[in-house]
Image (cartoon, rainbow, N blue to C red; front, side, top):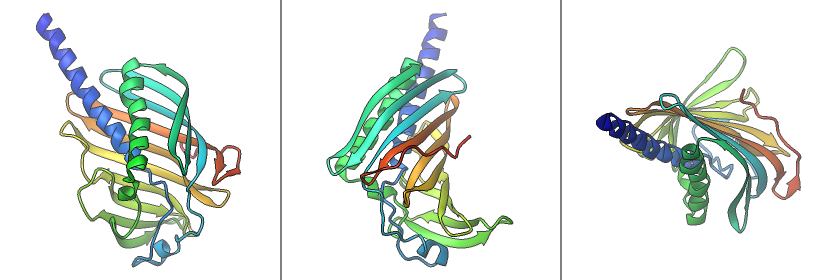
Amino acid sequence: MAHETRGRQTRHGLWVAAFTLLAAAAAAAVPVADSFKATSTSSVRALISDSNLHQYKALRRMHAASERFDHEGWMDAWTELDSRGFRYRIVSERGSDTIRNRVLRTLLKREQELIANGDFGRGELTPENYEFGAESSGPDGVRYVLIKPKRKDSMLIDGRIVLSPEGDLLRVEGLLAKNPSFWTSQVHVTRYYSRVDGVRVPIATESIAKVKLAGRSRLKVEYEYESVNGRPVGTVASAVQ
């Protein structure tokens, strides 16, 4: 019986460690700036913007869950980015203490550290980080552009970008170029984007990973903006159901 209990504790500890790293990777996967440069495809060249996101205040709604361990946690936090850096204030939380303290708080702290250290550029969609490949179109006019990371990095995605018929960015989706730990694999990330007051902003991020001994784990973050680049904008409805 004691051996069985220790086994469950060991598996639970491995899941916590792996999911904590997944949370860190998810935080790193959301570029702050709208920083496309000229590339080989006309659609991506058209994404050059003169109104990058450099300041915002947003309510961030976060949810994480482990299927096998049946843990779930929720957290809402006001987040702010400006010249002084990234700050957050948790306004509500519920569910698993492990999820809230080891995953959701880790996500916020990791993002704060990345911005303070100037490391967010490693995850942006630029020719320095990606090769932009073939472009195709769907029956509804939506465009798809393949992206290939230029290095193994848990802040980069091997997949594609999805553009509206007008050429605006809708989402980035694919597998992390590098797993955040030995215990995680097949980390699929989808980032959703929209425009608020003419500025391209992330509105949601979803991550699903296979964690050894713990099955699939999920992380979802949604953003509702109060202000963008110093201008009040109200809230934006999430595009994720």
